[in-house]
Image (cartoon, rainbow, N blue to C red; front, side, top):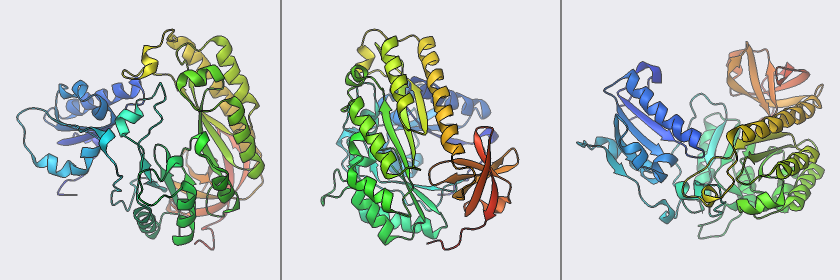
Length: 412
């Protein structure tokens, strides 16, 4: 691209672009360490830093050795032009992203090293949860034009991708910023009707945005994957209130049970945060017990991270790290047990999977529609294809399966 050649990071590139995350303080530290490592590999390299950390705290990156350019999330679109400018000192260009009103889809036709493709349909967030820096890093909620989304999906399908994942910060709020109102459900129906996509997967959806009509569309579709990733964050009403979440336990429990009734074999994974300021032992036990009773299939557990500029950063009773880690460990153990039970219920059934690239312990990996990790023996040429597997056991935190047929006949 533009005369540049991608080389392995460890080879010591002349130009290194670090696309940062700032969800936690740990990711900030990882970004800084990556910049320092790039300079150790090639002390004359030019480092460009962008992404969410650069957006919210460019000053923290400005003076790091080797950093020549710090640009915000919106400025990424002008990266090639900015690279052409020679500066005597570190150049910083970060605009007010809260003023951005549109989503510009990049012309993607492939994803290196991935067998599934990702399409960003929405960006930004207006929720302002008390712990979260994302509204400041990604801007206001806004949506990509549906025609651009359909065009990108059609191109990715033409390139051979069997599964497309719709992503964003608040995809359930899709339609914000569009001149002609449109909902996520309406978009999904258009994708299914107007493209040849074989499998369509939804990214994370807020509980208050998972509507009855969307659930009905998933339940009646042969294309949309029965997989729901829903942020819970806490299972105690007082903690939810302090977090600035707009639902309570009863609402969330009813939603999960509604999904399970409509789609008995659906994957339902939750996000949960441990160690939120002021979280008492009893409040954590309320969260643990609440999740233990829910018919879910997995958890993504995060330790609370103090983010300067957010209301939660000023709250009293910050929880010590050792307590947060102990609580997270208990939740992860619970998640592993729930996921094992869910996965084992499919032993002996035939499941369609998209084969991932690479191998683990000599076995290929496939992802089922309901997001089960399945390992099987097969040829690496199957990567990116849909095949049918029959699981026979649970080993090493994944299903083991036999290959039944390859590729799946009758693809769209």
